[in-house]
Amino acid sequence: MKFVPHAYQQYAINYIKSHPITALLLDMGLGKTVTTLTAIRDLMYDTFEVKRVLVVAPLRVARDTWPEEIRKWDHLKNMTCSVVVGTAAERRRALQKQADIYIVNRENLVWLYEHCKLSFDMVVLDELSSFKNHQSKRFKAMKAMRPKVKRIVGLTGTPTGNGLMDLWAEFRLLDMGERLGRFISQYRSLYFKPDRYNGQIVYSYKPLPGAADVIYHQVSDITVSMKARDYLKMPKLVSVIKEVYLSDEERKRYNGMKKSLVLELPGGEVTAANAASLTLKLCQIASGAIYTDDKGVVTIHDRKLDALEDLVESANGKPVLVAYWFKHDKERIQKRMKVRELKSSKDFADWNEGKIPVALIHPASAGHGLNLQRGGSILIWFTMTWSLELYQQTVARLWRQGQTDQTVVVQHIVAKGTIDERILKVLEHKDGTQAALIDAVRADLKMTNV
Image (cartoon, rainbow, N blue to C red; front, top):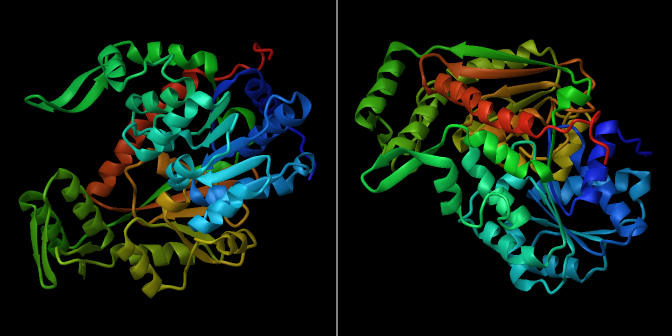
């Protein structure tokens, strides 16, 4: 297929080529993979600045999306890639192959650092936000590899899914601490103050007045951000809430759990050790089932299952993608109706070919990088997630460039008067911080000539 870049894509390609360090904050659906690959091709074959590239991505994106994009476009047909996933033996064989680009899933980055003798002069971190935890092994491995890398590109559409504190680790890998400091303690003391604490222990921080603007300015010289709605004719996104109502007995159980942190059920006792655990338990009750202390599952109600059945029926045969969170959600849905979980490359291909009427997807395992827009335009959230990043990324599997329907419908099944409503509000609140970052460093194509 012939690649004719949009103006914003050509701008991003030129930016990567002219900036050894690039944070490319492209909204979901703007084609960041082909954009980055085109820049790599030019650097490799036209200017000879790059010889070997490492791409680090989520598993399914590493295994499916990057190789598929290389095969898809005519101008990339001479590029070779080796996908470093699978067993240790398979990964070793992949590293022994001669290739321009080596693609590894982020879970195996530590293994790669410890076992790979190849040197890479360019690294692409697909979903830069997955490196936001500075204490993670993957962050430490990449930090150790970084000084030997001449060029680095960080790709994401959700840089601050949980607030500005996420940015330090992401940019620490990109510029080795030049803009936001080499140490997290530096960053915290300069831009934040304690928010919630108990004695000497600080549980959370909040930005100091004016800190956000300073942070955005600090990273603006290596950052490009673009929103899909500014550059593409996107389908209309319709968000709908489908409310379900608990019975008096179910409400009594929910409130009892909330107040006492202990719930007595015929199938066993459920306890919540702390606020985080309680949150999960309340989410489970809202969804209709809960795990007991002995790992059993007790069904509380079928309200959401009934609502899901109604929504699938009202789709009138159009394919429906259902997002779930807990394992018992999936099992209960599978018992109620014929569904197929999207996990393998074959599953994704069949969905895009319209062969799956009702598909299940877990945001944590399939939220990034997958192109599912050809298979349908209806997404139903059976269970909500607290993660803004996973929420937006999952929605963007359907609401993106290449969607043939004029409208993408996102249905949220919400148990009235439960934590479900709070989750939706939290997601809306978190978007403010992220939108501010995107807007602060948005590329001005009319005024910038690179």
